[in-house]
Length: 387
Image 1: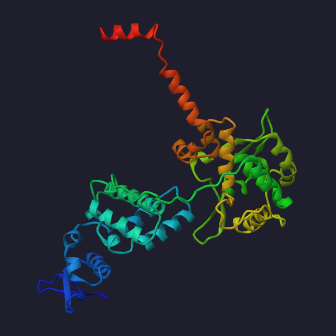
Image 2 (image 1 turned 45 degrees about the horizontal axis):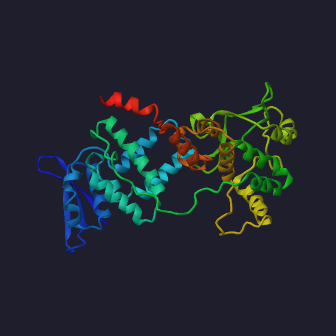
Image 3 (image 1 turned 180 degrees about the vertical axis):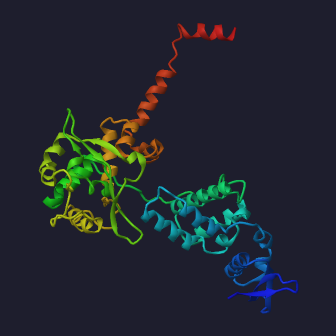
């Protein structure tokens, strides 16, 4: 462990010495710094490098750069966020503590280079983190560098242009069901949850959105009944549930409902009244994922879905099922994006473009028509163009 000792010079000024026993030589070693904050940062760097002077020497030039460390800048960036909820703030704090608390996190934010970022990514890979998780942490880091640029601690964002690991996993990320399969799952649920599962299947709403729907959110005027998604259940920093806005700005949306669903859940809507929750437990409280999962698992067991067989759908797969059924029924990818409440249509395309029915056939058909060539007319046009 390193320590800091305050020293007064003959001229009355003060310096701060970081002292530690070097791991390579076993000798007591010290390094002078002009103020306490820099000494604290240097102390963390020494400890993060195993108290090895040889490891620290290559970083001394970086340590002299003014400004906060990477970890300090991340904390500052999160503190300045205005759109993140308590649960998201808590996750950011955990990410900073778990993945930016070592040598990289102790470096001044203004000194970070491309090489530093590549080494950090390799460290994350060494921890066994997935490509998606690394990308998420990289996104937070990149946003914090933008904050550092605005604050004048550096001129550019070093995260831009850095190649991230690709997901080499061959495991299926989602398990959309057929219309028949998802109907059977719905019918296998206990009666008190059957309308709720039917709602998830027919709307593609997120679990937290559906459980927060109130009776007054349904609009029966016009030819089509709709439900307005305005809120969702979330967790705060103390892991307590609270009602907040949906996931993104475009998640506030109206979803049209098929008549069969309206007929099925109409008694629940009427019972809820204007302000009551439509989908509740047998005790009248909000449905929680942990409690509901028990009934979901029993329904799948009754239909023969074996654990570990690779074909057992998750609760969230009802959302993917809805997307697949809508695309198969002719809904455009743009319309689906609005219906699901995605912030960007690119999210919808990346996730569901492979589910578009007959996409390859239609592509070949369009290409065939575009490339058609009629000998009796086309050569004249070509000859004129070449003349």
